[in-house]
Length: 198
Image 1: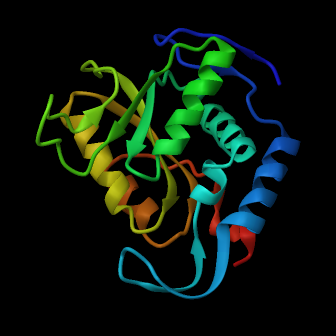
Image 2: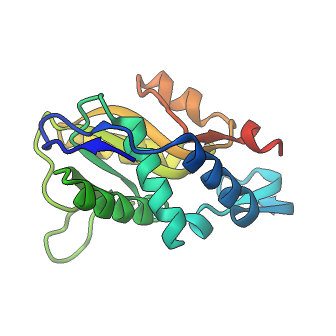
């Protein structure tokens, strides 16, 4: 793996994820994150499978590969900060922080709460303050209908940021991409459900 470090101004460049790494991540997701049966999703829809991305994003090796995959998706796009909604984005953002430190990248990182805290600084967006005009990528572990990631997108847009794209670990292809793209937010999944033949 090679990469050239970059400051926040330019965003990441270089190679972060090899083809072999991508295949390893696919195998981890298939064997650890998928369960089959009858499930009710947060959207209320029924499904014959359940995807629990945290089985991989909270695994050391999995987290490392996911972070590198995210950086691969945002390289060359001038992305200055990466973050997303609690709780799906939490381990991804933490892993991106570590990979950025190892690669000498000065990337901004943030987490978007469902609601602003009712105490302390009463912030909805946690992390070093995002400046107006900051180019961000919003990340999450799974995209279904798109509701939670859209809330995060709207929160950072209200803070004056420019959302360059949404990056998700797995797109279930259940309307989320269409919702985000209707709001002019490109979606760039690391995998789609078709990759797993579910």
